[in-house]
Image (cartoon, rainbow, N blue to C red; front, side, top):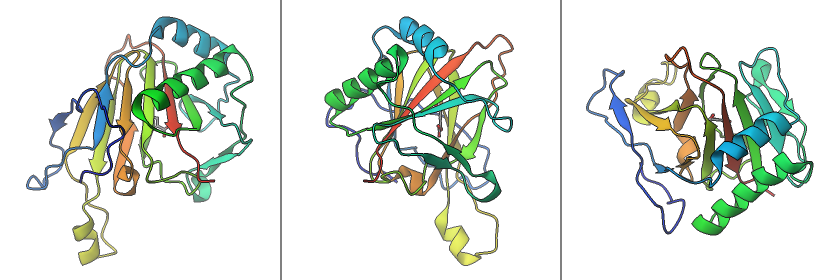
Length: 227
Ligand SMILES: O=C(O)CCC(=O)C(=O)O
């Protein structure tokens, strides 16, 4: 599945290393993701400012810290049912760190012709902190707009997998079937842009790292709200 391109001048293609963890090998897929190695100019300084400057929330059921920014004071609910968690909005104007998050967003919008207007920030203290399989498909978000995840700090992997719809329609009670998992390494200062429409059939996750010395990482995940 290839959906809308995130930009007219996408710098590089996704560098996906494919690993087969599905037995359905005839359904190999390529995640519609564009990887930009050097999106943030002074990534070291940005990491320090944001790691130390955000009003992070650490929920007891979340193995990472989080913070939510948008200019409309709009809360964001992540997950559903018993897993639903609501985050109150912080303003991009709150302090130096949040203004830098907005500056990075403005740069991406100017360079790639996108319309990101909000940012969910994750902070992973070490390699055992992680984020499980999910799609960023909450109704508050514009599903046709790309989502960009900017990485600062330690390199981590992001995994992608696509739902194989035809299997599900044969037997609606069957567990979902997934295609091969694709793995992308997210470097310091990079941006990975998940193309518009992707969240409807793909999931992603940040698995635990096998590197016992893995340091802290921040992800700035820019999205566009439905308004
Ligand atoms: O840490 C990342 O790069 C991914 C974050 C993510 O998937 C999310 O916030 O929904």
